[in-house]
Length: 482
Image (cartoon, rainbow, N blue to C red; front, side, top):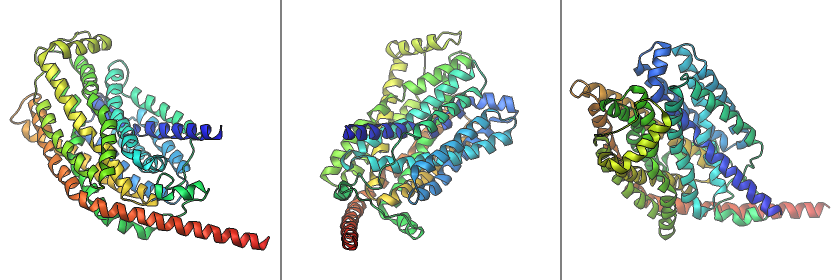
């Protein structure tokens, strides 16, 4: 009975933290479809709202480094409750913003709160997952993040046309309050309990007591595998970070077919969600990564590099495929638009091609996240994982920010020569070139993984033996006293 209760608590905790992973991407996904409405309401240019989105991403990344450091020293459950409370309150305040300055300020605090999700959530999750299942289970974490962006885009597209732009932020804030309540029922795992080298230690009821120290940060930053993982995240996110502009590209393409902005906005939100279905293969790619890693510690990196490079041609082809002969209802009815879009995928050759290309692109891209997450777990000690991940997340967000800024600069240049959606399609295509150095990082990393993983395993074995000996000595001393 106790064992069943323990397993149930583990599954419940994993489910809560996987759900939590979606929220930073939900908030990022909310903004692009709402730019036009927020700009009109606050009387500012749309370009200024791009700055708000970029600042939110940047503060999420920077703050996650500090949250990650704290996760190696203090109780993580308490920290994540504090962080969640910060971003939930800030999201509600965003919904009542009366000026551009207020919007920017509240999104800065939202980013500070969201920073805890990535680093602390990841740290807790990796301590629950069995070593041989890391890629597969962490794929769910990655899928939740991708799903978050889709939910944010859909939520904005469907509610902003019938309600105020403030409505989606209020909904997200309310759901966040429910999460805080759920935290009371989650169980914080022992640090390092999923590592096989510490299995005997945990079985005997002992704890892995090593904590991060400030002097460890330098070795974390310059560990060879980590350096390549940081760079890989940076280059990957220059390319994929620009993908939040896909709904805007679709809006222009649909308007080009003669539909109103309201119809185009609803349809683009649906298409963005439908065209990410390939991301569901993330679980399978995580499982394959686990299998390759069993054969060789460099297997996961080499396997993932192939799919990162395959992502590029599929996305470029998709961006530049037209939506000719698209037939949609003109009354902005969300249900009728959805039904007609599904029908179009089967009867319109252009829409069928778009669907196949998006399926291939999102599937190839989905191989990256679970295997990257598993690698950064494998090459770092348990007390270092939160910090290593949060530093990587900073590179991730810097790449995403540069991708967004780069898209704006390219679009500004190309808009003088290309009209309509062509400028958007070419700008997005150019940024996919950064997938090449991203794939090369995995290739060069593969050899370093072997030595870094061996070092982590050997260190954990030594520490496990030392802690067992220390525990036995303490027991012996107590028995002599009594």
